[in-house]
View 1 (spheres, rainbow over the protein chains, first blue to last red):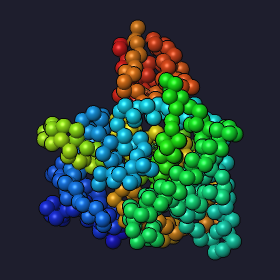
View 2: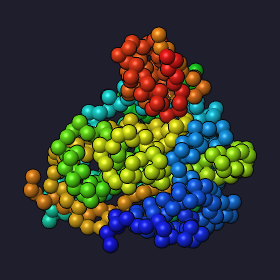
View 3: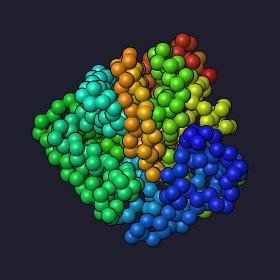
Length: 429
Length: 64
Ligand code: HEM
Ligand code: SF4
């Protein structure tokens, strides 16, 4: 059976579904989406016990939100559904981690608004115009290196390691001015942080210790860089951040370090996933690939559709700050909600033929970058630009790229990532 | 005349509006949204409506 053969949602017993079961996240995408379909249709607020994590007391459980309208309503009411108790983990953030990982994604107003305003000015479309040239250059370098490597051997390459991973990493490191010799550290640390305990990605037996160490390494690197830029300003993002002020307030060094960690983890694995899973989806839908390749005016719509279809970030968490009711569902203060973007992005109420990849899809009000609300992806413009350039240059420079084998999927509930995707350059252009 | 209003409490300075109609919206060097034309010309109104729809923080209103 191909992994994309539709799976009938009716075959699942709703009582047996468990989104906290790690094995569920190893299932092929078609199974995952059939289960989402079942929940969305029959139990749009489904309650699950929390996954067990070594060394931690399990918390009270969570509601899984799978309808787009509910997800969007929750995102739009940050005072009722807060991020401060943790947005990227089901467990509340342990105190020893919050020092490094207590970044704005897990903050509420007024702290969130203050930091978001300060950093938002470095991420506007206007500012990004200035990095576009570097995006094109980096993508071309990476593709040239991938081709050289493939042609030196038997033509084979790994889409993840050779194309999808280096592009966002180099772009962010470039923007921030991370020196060449520190980039390996950045890649390893961001892998650890986002592995979600996948043993293949962390050597560490104890994921919590590994997380703390990765955070410490990144923080140390960023503190050093920030100090250097105060001495010797350049035109990178680090310099802009150490100098940037809103209402006379600057970011503290701790806040800058946390923000860098957030950028690296939020900007790397997500974009990498969109590229790798996007290429896989194109190879599974050759008529869509041909259509996009032939028509550069489709870039914008196609990138949105890739993000919708892939949904690189599977969920974010919110926590209720009060008792209340939402679209007929009552909840209590302290209740946790997981907003399943991956499910909402296939909601038939919002998307016609939701399981089809339709690169010209319009309208396409997906929530891949988050619902309406203050935490909407800060890097959305950058990601869109990176993806548009990457796919377009791939079509031009590597039209002979061919996926040759099964992808190795990350067994993570949080990121819809691939570990490896075997491919080759056939040499036929 | 149609007027653009920004809810300052909500706006997160994402610049989505600027990416749609740079003639009307601009994030200034302090990261704060400036509305360049409170009463946008007819040509820009479609774009402004688009921006109102797209603003991730639902911070924009077009009073028509
Ligand atoms: C295709 C690629 C990407 C996807 C799918 C994605 C998705 C998301 C999602 C779902 C959120 C949470 C929204 C919410 O909680 O309401 C988010 C937040 C965020 N993203 Fe992205 N992202 C991507 C690329 C990037 C890039 C390239 C960067 C930066 C370089 C970035 C930086 C951030 C930051 C800083 C936040 C937190 C914003 C806040 O809390 O105010 N992302 N992203
Ligand atoms: S799109 Fe909305 S949140 Fe973003 S700058 Fe414009 S008004 Fe502010």
